Image 1: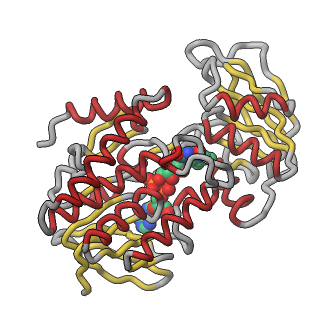
Image 2: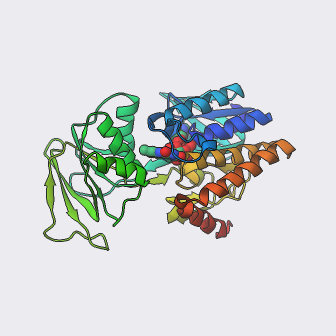
Image 3: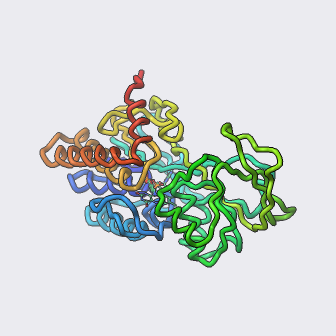
Length: 361
Ligand SMILES: Cc1cc2nc3c(=O)[nH]c(=O)nc-3n(C[C@H](O)[C@H](O)[C@H](O)COP(=O)(O)OP(=O)(O)OC[C@H]3O[C@@H](n4cnc5c(N)ncnc54)[C@H](O)[C@@H]3O)c2cc1C
């Protein structure tokens, strides 16, 4: 069984940044990702990213994926793509699956940067063909060039809901409406405003009540909800759509952290169960680090910075602290602090504070 000094699981912005930083400092790094192409969520993001200049603001997500992948390549990171980590076993061993083959890989130190999975909501007919998660719609359209349908109801007006709605319009697909259970739009105003200008109604305090159709979606019933998200009688409306796209948030993909025996806490502001970690992204299991959405749902910019902290600290744990490693950590932590001070950082800041107050056994 091969044993690597540092294994990074997940080739999104967090994992790629961790791998590049650790390899740049001199570690022997293996990066494992279950997709053919590195970049995680970024490979389906055709829009220009928001944020600040230092974090690729104005650059398309798919181009950021290329930049980060090239950087990891320059630092001689060994990449195992199309390979899933399916288990974490005692003795610092990972189980890797690639097609029908299974093998084990040992590690001295580990960064888990597996990202997040999409949430769904229960409603009659939500298992009909034509009901998608927003990530699947993006993958179909932006990675494979396949239109998911002709007329869509979007459920959720967070950044993902409004951005994917706009991308649907760009692909020539009609968006019948965006429904949002909260009384206000959740995503950046700039994205929502584009939809409104293009005539897409954004119905706040509304939800999807049912998907209609026998073999596949032929329509949707929407209704108004009250302050406690209960349907308001007499407000049902039918929309003729062939696709219902659900964009109602993400949950950290934390299975490997549970298997590792990390202390886990439920922090709603971070999207669900997350591993306790210190300010250097190290979990309660020494030598096991987290970075990116798996440590709390945020953005690509914060994922990259957390990745840098985790990568540099993992290297320090394996070797020694140097001025270079310290500089990387200090500057990344400083930038994380300033991003989280912004209007959209409030939730994550609150969640990270709450997690810090939890005490690992
Ligand atoms: C529609 C949309 C728009 C967005 N717009 C912006 C934006 O404008 N600006 C911004 O900053 N952020 C934006 N984001 C958020 C950003 O894309 C994510 O926060 C970021 O990609 C998280 O990075 P990550 O590395 O933690 O996870 P991911 O990008 O999800 O990468 C995780 C990787 O790990 C792999 N993986 C998971 N489990 C395993 C396993 N067991 N074995 C092997 N591989 C595994 C996954 O397949 C994936 O490739 C957007 C997200 C969406 C969906």
